[in-house]
Image (cartoon, rainbow, N blue to C red; front, side):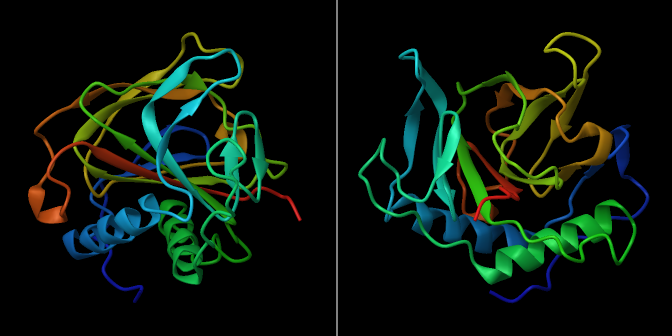
Length: 222
């Protein structure tokens, strides 16, 4: 997949916390369509998209498919032992380059993405009723930043503090094409999705309803 096709970040970025950056419209419509097509392919397998079952029996309302490493609460494995036992799809080089470009733009430093080599991505699909409770991304052994891309319906993203799920937190609307990066002092901040706003996405992206969220991480695993 060719790399060009980002939106123009411009001056509208926001920084809700140290190390956290939100850039609206970072992905161009063309890039969003390409990602939707790629996500549909990953959702079909080798490990199909599914609702993750939690250790205590609960089932997550979002549907998830993984690249590179399979996330199974609360660890990463090469094979999806909780689904079909297959090895997950490889993490593509073009997605590594996209992650590096995201960091360079988010931190306004051409060198910020150097050496950033994400090796897993969690791709979550939210329908109009799906939510994500406040949690930390802490199953990785690396503290490298998380790169999050949104496509489709707008959501209300709650970005909190590193100590607890409670206040202080900031509610941010993430729309189609938005980039959100959190690293440094905010790498282990609690965060979640409180609601999805149905009908706010553009069908021209190839996604007629719901929201796709692609989060790239560095596991630190061999």
